[in-house]
Image (cartoon, rainbow, N blue to C red; front, side, top):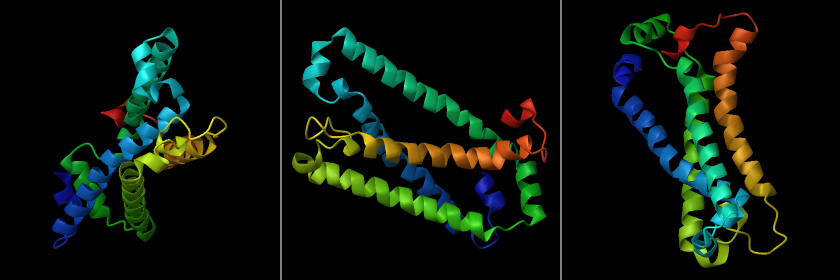
Length: 187
């Protein structure tokens, strides 16, 4: 694993646990974001409308599936952030570049996403009868005039974070001429 290659001697276990925590924080976060996406597809929020199997339900389901596939495929855009082999990993470590900003950013991001997904999951499970209808939690809305703005804002922030960091670190240097684009960045 390249985790062992990157970690400072004596800090292998803490580095591994931090990366494992960040990896495990993604599963509940993806479930929470998936439920929040349902706010934009109201016919998919209850079993009765799904059971009707109308063309509108099928259309919304197809749209949701297309959106999820597009998001999954777009994650490949972050591949240039990863070192390709042990050699590249060792070269990165040999440079000795240390960034307290990016270290703090990673730890803060991990803790934020972990807390956010834990709180939302707890609220939707424990208080489903009270808050389960809220669009921001993936429900169909507690009232007919409930806005999807909060759900849109949260989903937008998450996408902005995910795509913004990748763009800033990978594609902005290409656009400013600091690096050159190459197909080999992706494999």
